[in-house]
Length: 445
Image (tube, rainbow, N blue to C red; front, side, top):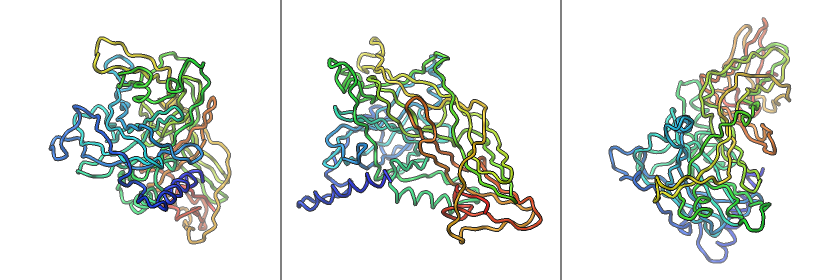
């Protein structure tokens, strides 16, 4: 509901301004033109050696109450890949972010980026071909740091697509279209990794909490990689993440990956073969002590997973144990490299590092079956692979030191949920909101 309330307030604001005689659209010409800051990584859209084509990113920036954040600078960056983060632990490389484009939000918080065609960005590409887009913004009243796992287009004027269906920021219609495409391809062997179009985004800004001494400005206390660097340290437009090496600062937390409901006739199995499709939101600790949440991200280290066996008459949430690690944000002036040292911004991010080899099944509530059309009969001694190409997302599923983080698990042929009829008569399963093959919400009825 929070997501829809935000969007509703934005559309209402658009309508009011339109009624005043000013012609507007959600991402129209009144959005400030963006400026490319990709530097040497920018290339021509028809360059045969390009790593991506040019593309647009559009949407609004809203605060916690759904009010527009206006006339504030917004920047999008390529955040360091997991390979860069791992290599930075030994000093082999520095996990430096790559600024792409900057703009200013408009009358109702609207923005419109044109990201140029890019080259020589292989270090930022994850093993599955995705990139981490990091949106950052800072004003005296608000701050924003939000990460999106995305696939970049190769064609000129193409569309960047979010791989994980993040309801917090993605346009509901685009999200529904992306999920429908995945459901239509269920069982065909097609991974359907195109994702959801990154147009009509709703980026969440957090009101700056001023707990610092009066001599320290709110801008100096807000987390925002590139923008923070510029405001806190004039001329410092580069940022990098450095892992905290203290072993005592590596908390472990259980992350939900699935929910399985059985009754008297069926058992189930969830094959969580690896950690490649599990994401959780990050926790950011501001310099002034305030805590905010970033977007969904995958673990730094990829590992093999584990299988869950669920007996009859069970309502279980399946959880896996993860080690998290802290990363500190540092800033640098690119014009003085390498003589000027990196400066500590006093901003830290808590993010998933690796699967810690623990798992558990926790009792939870069942699923409903309000639509008989969503029922599926399983013959005696037969089985059914369900929830194909779906995503199981849980809000506020991970609590730690003042944060309530979200988790998301994409179901693939490597992350497979199967129901087994153990009796000599037929059994029935039902999808709470769709057919069992097309939803993650499946249970025996």
